[in-house]
Image (cartoon, rainbow, N blue to C red):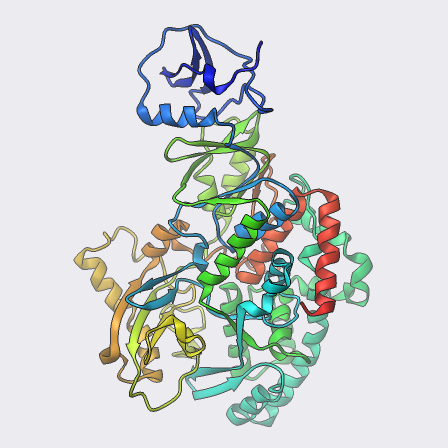
Length: 612
């Protein structure tokens, strides 16, 4: 049959659940009753029909007519489609674009970045998610830095130039208010604080613990995500974990005998070396901030990576992105565009499309369809990804296995947020850019309304707030239960009352910093788990999976459904900016060519040596 061009398309049809193109009296089905594309053509410069039906035309809905006609432009097929523009999705998309693939990122929101996006109101800038960064302004093994070093390979775009390094932060603890410093030249600062709070006996425990942690830090550096390449759908569960770790055996060397402990919970080594209650509580707090669960659930290698940056022999300073996390997202987007990739905002993916059991594209809520010749990558959570799988699709049971994974995976709790714009022109004491508040150690760091993180980024970057004022972001780190909010109508009296009640702990923490802060606040915005669920499209507003190290294993990016990959916090290694960056890198490694993978490995190692 002759090649079909756009000029030959006379109409589109919709009849009995089927839809497609019409050329005279001939029909070419595109949509099936199963609500997925059947792809009956080739995409090499035109379309070649393989199935036709001669049925009189019927009235076609205008939205469907526009959607189907747009498909004939030939611009809706890409090598890879990435659903969601969180840091994990942007990492994956950018690397694949640099490898020469045609990549399209589809983002439901009006702005990119996922939880890392930011916004301005009344002259104040606010982050919506992560505010604590480290290992970015100086050479480190942070996977996020590794990804950015690959994407921003122009001398003008050096990764360190994107960040403001700083060392001091405030601790608002049951033991009192303290200031501590992290980074080069401050190696003795936290040990001195331990001696002040708990004495010499606790300090000796800390020194022994630090010595033990160095070997696990070395182990975490050897397990470099830039060297992980999981092909097809063989990266599921324990077999995938074991098969990939085998590739590291030559480089693990003397650390191989620590591998079991390294993949287990951080509490194992803590129990061996730390008896002092303050030190045990402190490590629980760090694990909670890092992974959303205390030490008993945080993998040892994940903690060791961060511990080396903060308390290792060559500590790194803390970092904050210039212009806020929004500017960091813009750097990812600029790199993606430079390599030929693209992002489409306000493009909500309603369903993933399949052909013969393989993921081949997506359909938006508008009806628009996009096709992927190599892979579909979902940067949404596994729970939200499963909502995109049509129950009528014949996926040989693999879709059911993915749904079962989502059912069995326990979710972390959510957040309450308080964004404030405050007048500090007559404030007499200096402020830190970050504070950590703990109300009561005995309740546990994962107890609700007990731990608060406070970020005041305008202390570092004065462009984020009007002169003489500060922008403040206070939040409970993944300790707010979704269940107590479920069913409340946003804007209702009950919802507003709940907001005021659940932010009392945030005000309590803030008053330790600025006692009269309520009278100084001229902007006040409150975010709830329902805010997370709505604007970030996070199932139950969750922070991510509550995986228990040594008991649960997060799968690698490829799913059992051919052509469908997941990246982000529901895939190895888990929650946090370094972890989702690693997930995006691992996902990209498995999709790009082997030559591109090898080239990127060499680049990462070279840039670390050159301190780029």
